[in-house]
Amino acid sequence: MLKADPLTGYSLLAMLLLALLASFGWPYLASLAGCFAWFAASRMFTRLLPLQRVQVLIMFALGTAGLVYGQFQEGKVLWWLKALEGNQGLISMLLSVSFLRLIAITELAAKEKLPLGRTALWKTLLGVHAFGAVINFSAMIIMADRLAAKQGLTPLQALVITRGFTLAAHWSPFFASMGVVLISAPGASLWKLMPVGLVLAALGLVIAGSLLLRKPEAELTAAYPMHWQALTLPLVLAVSVLSIHLVKEDIPVLTLVSLLSLLFTLVLLLVRYRYKTKQYLRQHIEITLPSMSGETLLFLAAGVLAAGLGSALEAAEFSLQLDVFGPWQAWLLLLVLVVISGLGVHPVISIATAGGLFSPWVTDPNLLALVFLMAWALGVSLSPLSGTHLAMQGRYGLSSYAFTRWNLGYVAILLLVQLAALHFYAFLN
Image: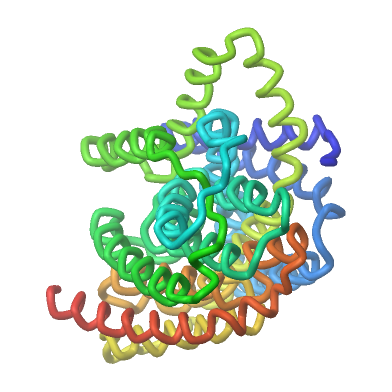
């Protein structure tokens, strides 16, 4: 049972609203938003898992050391402000998207008999991908809870759900991966990243389904009762974000996702429940938002790390001196990032670090951004310490380290697919 924490919840809401206002022309509010974010973080630190605490403290310590070094050498306060305000757009997006679960859950089948067989599992794979691409982690948990209700979650069911979900990191503007990448590879275009990411995700779904559903037990395995009308909300929301971004490219994608997620939630709650809207919103703010301690603190600490790294590199006048950054160099970077994730380092840490090192010297930010999206999608599939696999372990009793073993061959195949994709992208550009 999650514990209510109104002070933390409303602090996060204040940060979210101030960050939105800052992005719409009141930039001085960004520092105030950062203060609310760090106040909430100080109250949420005790909620972290032991490993998350270690990761957050290491990132915070390294980032602070870089800021101190830069301050001593250059005497600039700009990097300290970046650390205070770091990643608040990304955190705002995560918090805003979490509100969508208030209107999405009612769209899903609750008491239907679970269908069996390969066709039903294919629908589950595609459904968790499409639905999870918008409401994120909640979609995976909703479906897994339904499948695990009577007999527990089988490894096959867990792999169908987790692989379908994580592949959306290739392209979804509602995923944390896209937010991190757009920040870590300045100049990258959503319009160039999404088509490539969608193709990669489609290939990944075909590969994942082909590998999993050829198993003999697939024929008798229960699947989620997927109703395609439940995808109306994700589709309308995604089209709305992309349409507005096409007309108003000066509005950041993260801001659009945050604003439309909140507006859609509020409008549909009023239409469906009217008098219970206030109750549902209050519960979400006071209980659900404070429970998002892991992602909130990881991204805040990653912002400090990125600012500290930037400050230290500027002070040291560091230059990577890249002669060329083509598809082979991009793939080798991808390989390094995936291996690091496999060792348990969260992708946000490795991507933030690589972004600070490579982004000033890479001539095509979209190529670097594609590497980061690929690294996130494969990294969370391989890492035993990703939130996806830790949820499978803590909630359904499946070893998170077993997922690393189960996914090794799958990730190896996707790495080869992505090597071909990087070469094809380079050929077209």
